[in-house]
Image 1 (tube, helix red, strand yellow):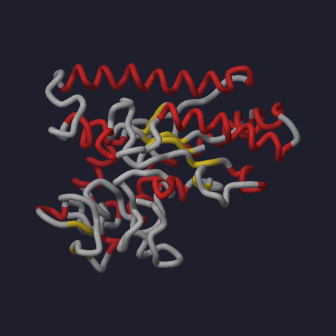
Image 2 (cartoon, rainbow, N blue to C red):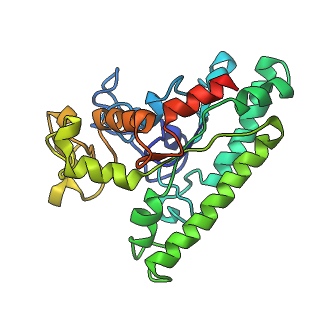
Length: 280
């Protein structure tokens, strides 16, 4: 199950009325069709690289046996705070994503033969949540569009985000709490990004300061568009556009999450967690 923002949105924003979409070239230039897919990437994103990558919940293709592989509820532009992304239109905020998961379980029950079987399947699923980036770049640090800019110190805003994130996690746990214990891990995205930017050679990249697609200083102004500067050696770039990794970078980052040490992912890496879940 995938929740969160544009780092893991696999196309849900294509189905809602928002100004934040990845539906124009050169997004998707390295996808199998070479066309935009709704992913904020030149190809695949983190969600696509997970085992048994789920389809977008809003996609008409998510039905029947496809439901057995989970669902992706993520929407570009959302944040931990419910007012993040208010300038973007009808993005699918976290309360709506969680409500969509409840609807998904109802649909799944019709496929697997009942609510109890559906709950057991969902309880054994990997929940991948990507949140927080837009609360900073699209909210606190984005006046005059921000709902929060200037209302508090950065430290107070971070404390607020922590309390709101705890509420999101509690709600997800409540949906399946009767089915046993869960294992939680957290990736330190700051440390991972810092390592990639300051030592790109160690991960097989040559460019970590300039985005592959964009305009302005460092190609970091606005979204990637058909009129943007576009690099040809995309596998050598850490960043695809001003916020999102290239497919190759997403692969490398996910490898760190799967196998990395405690300073970048705790209390265990994702491979260890999935192995523990298989044994229970």
